[in-house]
Image 1 (cartoon, rainbow, N blue to C red):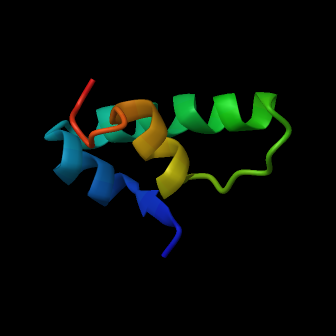
Image 2: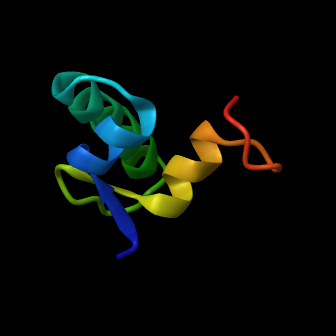
Length: 60
């Protein structure tokens, strides 16, 4: 799959379900502002990883 769901975000970041949804909304808003179409409750894996990991794969 080319996207993460709230369950995966929750597990990756060790956050609550509501926080995972909030992160997805924030990232999707950024994508929409750049002209991309988004799917509610899902976020692009590539975009998520660009925002949360640096070039070495470590957390920012």
